[in-house]
Image 1 (cartoon, one colour):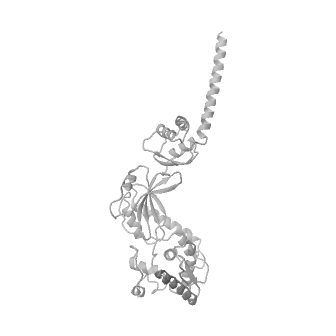
Image 2 (cartoon, one colour):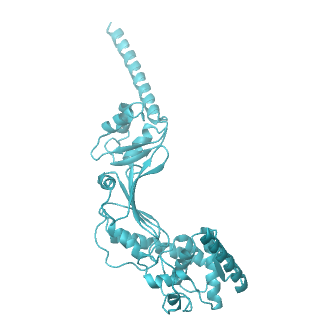
Image 3 (tube, rainbow, N blue to C red):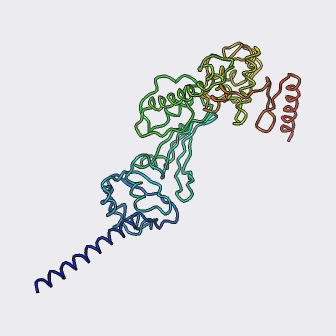
Length: 384
């Protein structure tokens, strides 16, 4: 009798062991299997939230089949206590294992709301936007110019959210003074700016910042980035440049940046100016004259006067030989690379061609013909 009971007990134990093993295998497979999401969603994890709450929310949204199984999987992989606050983009068909990895990995939020402090050449603003996870496109919530009236309520609300990201976006060709003005208006940053950084020393780019970051630390990041870009470009420079130092290359790059907004033209514009330097011709470029007037503080919203073109200043390249003493803006990577590796040409003139680009010429006769065409285009536009 006891032998029969023992035999039955062993059989039951074997069956239970097999069932448990099967359940574990099934659970592991389901934990790593493709999920039910048909399109991406944004998952927000509040500070102090638990894996139980997050998994229940995900089950309710149809992102996982079983919140309980997700919790078990997170505990089995020892990630249940590693939740990070933030907003995370969960792609379609993500497995439970994928989602647990996203919400426990940490780092910057990958979706949700974002405030961008934008430094532009002609104007600067603050943009409040939110990522639409289904399309991976941003939806504008608010946009305003700092200092012009009260900030919209959307800005105040979004700024207070724990998962909001903050960014400073610096356009190519802006001046250091313009950057500092925007940083001063960014009320999520701290501290003062002792001095405006040297012109040209800041790298145009998009910089993620955190609440409480100092303004000086952001400027230091921008300067370090520009230094690296300039160093890399200078090390791969062409052999026959008409200048001798990286600092002079930066001046040339800033002129190129201000002379053309057409990316494909940068190398040819660089060729014109560097051919002029080789031939001992003056650069004769309006942006340098304008910088001599504004000192980079704001824009000159009018044409240059004859008296300004005739006045001898360190930045008036109609009156001085060679380049101005400093850059006239903060050039981007492409303009720096064009300055040290220009196109090869015999062009020494260029003028607008009416398409947004320029017509280039090797001789004054060709240039005058191009100028006449441009003046005709201007006249036709004025008559319309």
